[in-house]
Amino acid sequence: MAREFTSVGVVGLGTMGAGIVEVFARSGIDVVAVEVSEAALERGRATLTGSTDRAVAKGKLAPADRDALLGRVRFAAGLDALHTVDLVIEAVPEHLDLKQRIFAELDRVCKPDAILATNTSSLSVTEISVATSRPNQVIGIHFFNPAPVMKLVEVVRTVVTSPDVVADVEALCARLGKVDVTINDRAGFIANALLFGYLNHAVAMFESNYASREDIDAAMKLGCGLPMGPLALMDLIGVDTAYEILDTMYRRGGRDRRHAPVPLIKQMVTAGLLGRKTGRGFYTYERPGSPVVVPDEATPVADAAALADGARGITKVGVVGSGTMATGIIEVFAKAGYEVVSVTRGAEKSASVCEAVKTSLNKGVVRGKVSEDDRDAALGRITWSATLEHLADVDLVVEAVVEELSVKKALFASLDEICKPGVILATTTSSLPVIEVAMATQRPADVIGLHFFNPAPIMPLVEVVRTIRTSPETVATARAVCAALGKTAVVCADRSGFIVNALLFPYLNDAVKMLEASYSTADDIDNAMKLGCGYPMGPFELLDVVGLDVALAIQRELYLELREPGFAPAPLLEHLVTAGYLGRKTGRGFRDHTHR
Ligand SMILES: NC(=O)c1ccc[n+]([C@@H]2O[C@H](COP(=O)([O-])OP(=O)(O)OC[C@H]3O[C@@H](n4cnc5c(N)ncnc54)[C@H](O)[C@@H]3O)[C@@H](O)[C@H]2O)c1
Image (cartoon, rainbow, N blue to C red; front, side, top):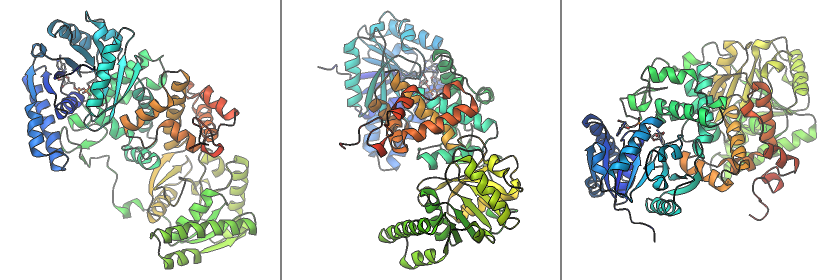
């Protein structure tokens, strides 16, 4: 029989604590909510009423249920009010000495059989537990932000946590409607160990002017389907909390440089730019605590005319290549009203690309997304050719041939001979340096990367890659073209992986390393990222879809270019690729897909 919890205490009513109070009170459990001062209590109370009022306004909570919920919460300054509760969850700032002091005090105040839990994200639960005389009743209950929404709870047991306590807490999580994963006490547990290297890397990109905050965030949302971009997430987490978590993970987690907080983060903490809670972090918010972003001096001009300043007129577009990407790109341009010249290596290839474009457009007709007239008009705009000479009068060329530098360089040298002056020459490479192909021409200022995502007709994102030789007019033209295609363009510098792959693949590689270290299972890791962070797929699901060979190749490129030891491909990934377990395409990757 699992233990019945009728009243719990929550210590610290900040970003997490106020949400945790709501979770318990919603499930019919009485809560004693504790803060350091009356002013802090008032803030916590305001957060709780704000959140429940929003739930009522959205129709997710009946007004009577809100009143009952609020009626279950008693606010108190000081820990003494916790002497009757069955369980306490501590959610004060991420400092070991503070948490140890609070646990020593809780140990003195609370009933002998009360369970003492910490919501720490990165500190050692074991070290916190030894501040008490009951370390076997101390456990980590790590909620995710926002606590009322995110389904996951990481239950962290130390080597001394009693199995009964673990079982009782797991049963409690189920009662709260949460999904728990139980793991050992290691820095960052599952989700944060995989998340924070990524967040820190995104901040480093921003700090080095690699791309704007809006573009970094849009890239991860639109390129990976994440619920929010990394910088917006830093603001939600709290920049100070993120700093402490990174710093602890760096010190506890083997001094991985990727966790050493980027200097900008410390500067923001010092300047009081803590994110949503202070109304300003990477973005500016309507007021402290508000999720609504308002424009500030760094907000890009929304004025299309200003953005297109210097852009060249594009009406006719050449697409070179006959693979998946070329096929999708031809369709995208033709549908958007551009005249398209498709160049392949022969009539047979042209015929099959033509067939593929027709099939895809017909699917659009069946789904009611394209009218028959529009389909016919789009097909009518495409000319099929097998010679590059037909590109003599186009305004833009998009190259999507095989991912081999020598092939691309030779092609760009030919385009340089054939195309008229002023043409924009674009490559869709996902991993090669754009500057290499640019320098194969006499006009590097006109060369740019246009990295479409697969399938091009569906994915809304294009990474626009400017090299150190690309002219502002070329960038403006690329932006204008993406806008005309209905795509979101994000502009970044010419570094391996651009934005999306550079941020995504190291995280996937880290997940493989975590599995390899037997810290957790593929299922639990996938669940943690989906339920704790709102990712559409877990890392192993995604790796099996992308292809392990593709992931390994990208990870190797990143490692070679950045020489970051933490980017070294996981040995398990190498072994699976060697064994031919490449993912769905071969029937087996991290999972066996043959019987599904
Ligand atoms: N922010 C997140 O996304 C997130 C997610 C999961 C876990 N966590 C963890 O939750 C904990 C709290 O983080 P947060 O982001 O909510 O911090 P926060 O700064 O938003 O809130 C901390 C609260 O603790 C209060 N406090 C400080 N000293 C206290 C004391 N002695 N007694 C009572 N209250 C006290 C502060 O007044 C403040 O309201 C940390 O351990 C953090 O790592 C944070």
